[in-house]
Image (tube, rainbow, N blue to C red; front, side):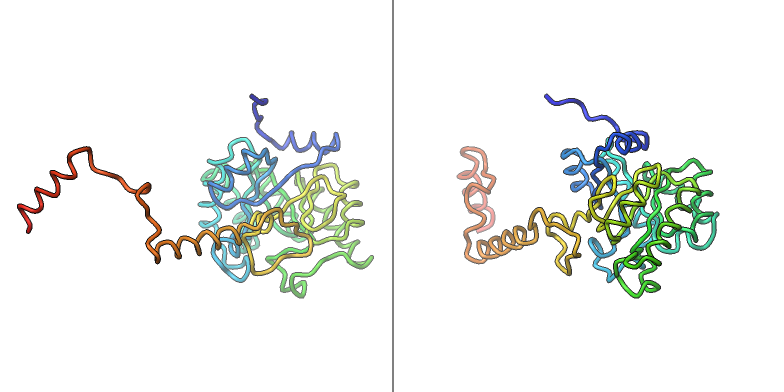
Length: 288
């Protein structure tokens, strides 16, 4: 028997950064997937608003609601009690006011039992971060490519590609640290910029498409296992092709049902010995 897995906390993650141990982070949207991640020993799980595309088939994250995020977060929490589970604040759950931000962040903890919440933005959400922290909730910032505001960025494009834009990212990162956040996610940022920010900040900085110089990596589970087929971002490495496996299995099932190969005798329940003949005799007398 292996060593019992200990609960991952914010202190665990901070210690990992100090000793240079990389943090593993994956999205999860349901109980079975979170169970697999827990069994694999994943450090962190994000119930991301990417569930809009990966679960509901939306074109983007904008339609995702708080209620949807809460339901999925609750399922993931039940499946992965030892992982550090984070809820993703959906569009318009925190942009309107500090009060709305605290109320909705609190729902993640109260109704789903997550360990932290994530919200997009740097300087412009500093007051939101401070307010949520004042309520006793761990906050993760998110800068670079921020999908909820991708329209302002000209689409889903990498950020920090020029010196000027890289400096803006650094200012956002410093503002997030000053506001008191304890984690930061960098998305679609050059590794040179990500590395500088990681060294500059005292808390863990995670990468999704921001290169190897951060304290850990995040991937969308649907990308990692080859389930999401609409597109594959440049930074994704597919470790499996579940879509191909599942489609093949379903195709074979259709074929066997059509030809009568399934179900075979081994997939059937049989009456107790002698009852089958008694049944035939009984229905022959009563119904024929």
